[in-house]
Length: 204
Image 1 (cartoon, one colour):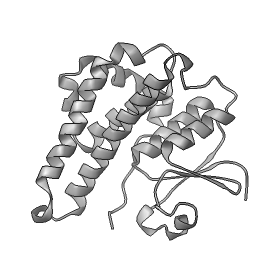
Image 2 (spheres, rainbow, N blue to C red):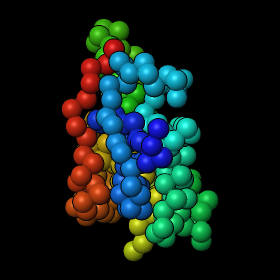
Image 3 (spheres, rainbow, N blue to C red):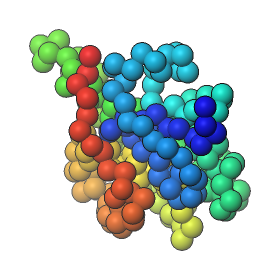
Image 4 (spheres, one colour):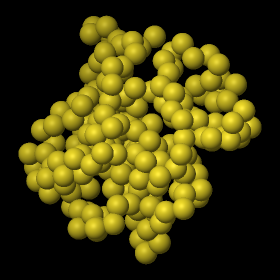
């Protein structure tokens, strides 16, 4: 098996997008294969959770988007995207961004894959409250994490906000003007434009 990293990804996964963007920013050579996770039993051998993203490097498997981003950073010849001067603040921001993505994914599955009469409306409401509350929190931290240097927490926030607009609503920007303008600017970059979500596979 080749040592060129192979990223198994989904067409709309915000976690996979975070990894792809990180690889592009870090100029890490890799291959990407977008798969239908519901029909990809072969992945069970590498990741028993059968989740994307999953990275294969030779005989090594790296799971979870945060671990994959750390791996890309470790092999890149470019400057690290993990800021040493605010490392733990950055990791916290990543965690909150992951929570936004996770709740947005869960909300979408609940609303698209479950018959309307069987949907858990209280759960959907909780997902939405967590998403919007977290975005409001990030807006208050804006001046702490938005710098001239692109870092992993910014990448994570951008993927989380863009996915929220894609799967839920872009009305989050009405009360978060700084983040809305920032997202408009960062999504003009090639690393965001080239990783836009595609057509999703049917939930099975």
